[in-house]
Length: 335
Ligand code: AHM
Ligand code: MG
Image (cartoon, rainbow, N blue to C red):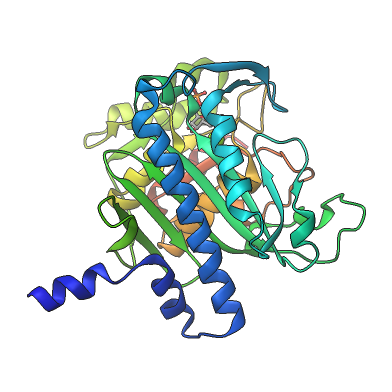
């Protein structure tokens, strides 16, 4: 039993990546190193979140607004900078693109050798930070295509099948990192005493149907009729529970583990909704599909959407395959 426990504790994230790729070649080493850096970012952010309430300058707003016109929180800035810092001098990543930066951040000392681009949302669900509820970080890795000499990052405007890895870190009662590289979805729990992410669930499968529906019903009268049709259906049928935390990563994690559907539909005024494709909906769509679930705009698979700009948004319907199909059926009925 002791040997089994030791083996378990030795299944760290970087070892798991090499095992998944069944290779110790340069590409596998790169991806393992990349995941290791992302894990380090997660540990640094988790550490700060744990102490934030005791620090003078960790919580609250900076007084600035970001490219999306949203008020920037101090924790957004900290977490954004953490990802930049961990990838400096890494030789791995030439560009990072995030929710908090209008243009990608270039690390000249890694260019052009750093063949990967990291796309990320440093703190997803920022409104939860000041009240000590769960938040997350979302990430995706893409191969850089072309040398991008003019720094237009035009090669990033491709669909979600171009992602070579994606995942998130959930800062909850424990810190959990979930990732996929196209060989299933796996979760790691941070053991603070070791400072390592240790494998806790391998090959996660989303149930075909689940009880949870997760949506901001405060927007009820801003939606199209079809979304109201779905919500009325849920209200009239047994077996559904509403769960909505205000942080996509946490709400999605529940659905990944237990089934159900998360929706952030467009509104009549904003048909594309709120969530951004490259660093929010596409990475989670990649995980959902890898776990046997689905992710849709309501009319099209998220992974097929080609963004027209870095911060493009899409509506999102994600989770169990049957539940996503049910929402889509209400949408197609009204078209
Ligand atoms: P953020 O990345 O700026 O925090 O915004 C994304 C968040 C999601 O985590 C969450 O699902 C959604 O916005 C909540 O929005 P709303 O308050 O409109 O329901
Ligand atoms: Mg976000």
